[in-house]
Length: 289
Image 1 (cartoon, helix red, strand yellow):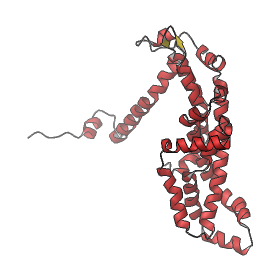
Image 2: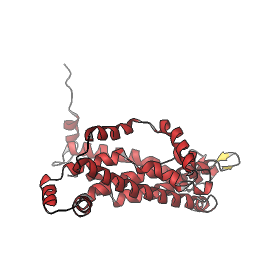
Image 3: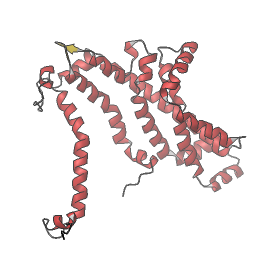
Image 4: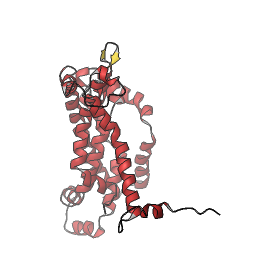
C-alpha cells in the first residue's frame, strides 16, 4: 500500500540542519504572494516610462525610452497636478468634517440619556445598507435645490456624515472606564470639556485610524464627482485619469501616459498609509507580534 509523504518531512531532508521547514514554506508563500500583489504596480511603473508603440510590444518589459516625460505631460499638458490638488483639498475637508461630526455624535450616543437611543443608533447603522446608486438621484436633486452644483460643497458635503465613523468612535468610547466619567461629573466637567480634555487625548489612535480610512475612501471617489462637477478644472484625480484615457496617439490609447497618471494618483494615499500605518492597524484591531 502506497504511503503519503509529508511535504514538510521531504523539504526538511533538503535543508541544512537547524532550519525549520515549516517556517521556510510560510516565508516562501509570503514572498510569492507579495510578488504577485506587487507585480501590477511594477508593470505600471515600467509602462509609465514607455512610448505608445513600446507599450503595445507585449514582449517589451524593460524601462522605456520616454523616461519621465509621460509624467511631465500628465502634469503639464493634461493639468493632472490640479486634479491632485483638488482631490487633496476634497479629502482633507471630508476627513476633518467627518471626524468632528462623528466625535460629537458618538459623545451624544454614549454619554447622554437620549430617548430611543438604541433605535437611533440602529437607524444610523441602517444607512450603511443603502447602496450609492440608490442615493445618487435624490442627492443630485438636493444639491441642485441648494445651489451647490459644480462646487466644492457638492463633493464634500454628502460624505461628511458617516455611520462607520460614528460606530467606531461609539465602540471606543464605551471601552473607556466608567470611573473616568464619574470623576468628571464629580469635578463638574462639562461635556465639551470632557470631550476635549479626556476623550480626544485617549482616542488619538482611533482618530488617526479613522482619518486614514476616510482619506483613502474620499480619494477614491469617482462616480459622484463625475456626475455633479461639470467644470473640468474642478475635477478630482480619479476623473482626471478618465480624461487621460481620451488621449489617443495614431488611434491608440496612450497607456504609458495613463500609467504615469495612475502612479501619480497613487502617491498621496500611499504616503498617508506609510506615515499612519500604526494607528490604522490599531483601529482595525490588528496586533503586530
